[in-house]
Image (cartoon, rainbow, N blue to C red):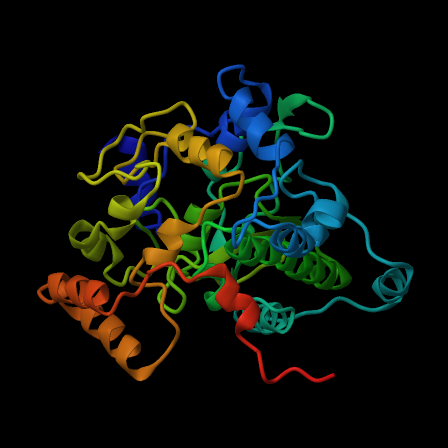
Length: 390
């Protein structure tokens, strides 16, 4: 462990932080636009969409999936650039501006203000919410703007030292159909809801007289921010795993200068479970997820290396997306943490928090019960049969 990692652990984040800021241009989806090696995959995935006479890939299925993305694609643009659309860094509607100009300051302690902000975030449809201080190395060093093709340095105001991190749970039933358009609809709806929640919370904070910068996949790394905010751990599949929803969440955040009381990293046994499980790696269609141990070096320039963890191979992952002409979420579908709430599943979560001895048994039972098995896309459309009204 390097000196900066020790300093980070001592400073209260409780897990290592890379010694450098990641350039967003090297992120896989951005690379697919400008990198000649990856451009054929980008062409197949983004341009050469073909409807097929196959459940989950018909025109009906694609129309459903594309509709779920419409808020993100048409109004938010968080996957395209920062400080734009619903993720714009400034601005409030005229009615809010009137109250902002005429009302006095809101004076509450950071502890009370954190409670209020979390209540507001949940009202604005966040399923989980936490607060953290912002480490500068979680902010991208540069942005690659998909709308203009520009590449430029990225900074947020130094005074915005806090981040309110929100997790939006994706639909369990549709996710069971991954990697088809039905599973893709669950992902798209998550992104559209991210923009909704982040925009409204930022507007609320601005109405109190403070800066608020909403962010989806733009501006900063979401997983370490969510970890520091106490929402979960990073699993073998490279995604945040939450205690309540597993990896079946999408993440957004709001950076602010509003003084807040912060939460802390709360591991609950994910690392130990992932060491035993490997279901995401075994079932990954592209074999992009490591079956081995952790390392400090990722296999690609699209990984931010430097800390010990499991690294996913983004080239292999995106190559499958291109071949499938649809985003994949197989790793989320098969993860044993991806379970609806219930007495049995809650008991397993509680036991796994306290001991690793039964983890192999839990994985065996997960296989025996066929959890994670792909559900036919046609089953999604038949789900409410008999309950529809004329």
